[in-house]
Structures are given as C-alpha cells and as structure tokens.
Figure 1 (cartoon, rainbow, N blue to C red):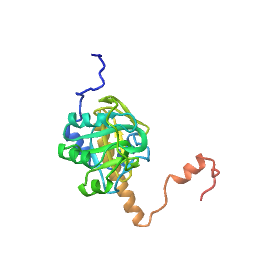
Figure 2 (cartoon, rainbow, N blue to C red):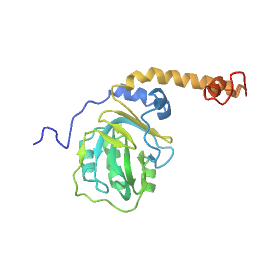
Figure 3 (cartoon, one colour):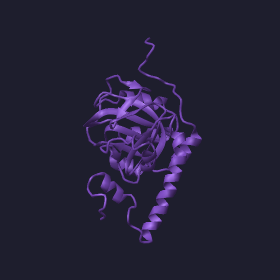
Figure 4 (cartoon, one colour):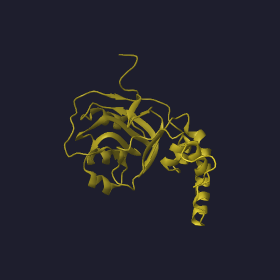
Length: 228
C-alpha cells in the first residue's frame, strides 16, 4: 500500500470548546478578521437562507457526478464534522439527497458543503439540516469511481484542509485554518462590539463615514482641499 493513501482516517481536529466559541460569530465577521480571505465563492449557497452551521472540515474529493467516496466519508466522519466535498462544481447530477442527508443528521454530522449539486431540497428543508451547494439537479449520481478522503481540497476557490474550521449562514461559507481560528476570536469579539457601536451612532443620526474623505483623496477623486 502507498505511504500516501487515498483515505486518511485520522487528522487533528479543533477542540470542541473553540468550535463553540467560533460558532457564535457570523462568517462575515470571521472573514473580515481573517484578512478578508477564506470565503468560498458565492456560487456555493445555503439551500435555504436560514440554514447555518459550524464545525470541523472533513474533506472529500470526488469525480464529477460520482458519490462513492461520500458514502465512505460518512462512515468515517465524527459527530461535529462538516463534510466538505470537492465535486468539481458539476451540476449535471446530484451528489446527495434525502437518504444521505438523513443519515448525516443521524450521525451527528454538523452540515454539508458541496461544490456540486444536491437534490430533494424540499425534504432537506423539512428535516432542517444545513446543506450548502452550487444548486440542485434531480439526476442521481453514480457510485463507481474512486476519490480521496482527508486530503486538502479546493471548494469554491478556497483550499480547505482536514481539521480546518468551517462555518456558513445565509451569506455563504467561510473556512479558517485550524491553527489560526483561536487567535481570531478576540479580534472577532472586538469587531462585533465596534460594529454595534457604529450602528448605534448611525441610528442616532451620525451617518457620515469618518474615513470617506481621506479615502477619496487617496484615490484621486478629491483634491486635498476638497470635501464632499
């Protein structure tokens, strides 16, 4: 057997306490404090806007239209994991549907992110299980082609490693490196506080952005002596 197998069963996960803390923040907040990076392409969206999740990435790579390795990943995933599936952006057939999503929920999987299509969206909505995909297609998948589990994948233009933190809501999905997420939490807390203060100021009538004039001058829109 190769020293670099297709299926990597064990990898370091983020402690549950850190997941719980990080889950309190919107993906938008975490993306901002991470340097405005880590957000998956907007083509990957929640099946329903209210859906949200947070957990540890369990990565899967499949060939377009084949879900064999997703079934294997479900057998290996732990409660709290999020299946993060590189489906190559294919929308010609669904990779998962009601049966698989029901099993995921029963297994304690925290959610599914798939760069590909799913189906049975109405039933998935009714079971209130968070699923993020590039869309839906009624056509079913094959189960014939090998892939990989527990390797880095590219999903929505972002590289996700097994064990990374991943979270999603109605805005989309954000991934943060496992070794980075804890250090971002104080920054996220500060940003939430600062934004709340700014919103309160706006509601009191202070709608002007203090930074705008300087930014317009830097951009060459205004001369140094000009103001809006």
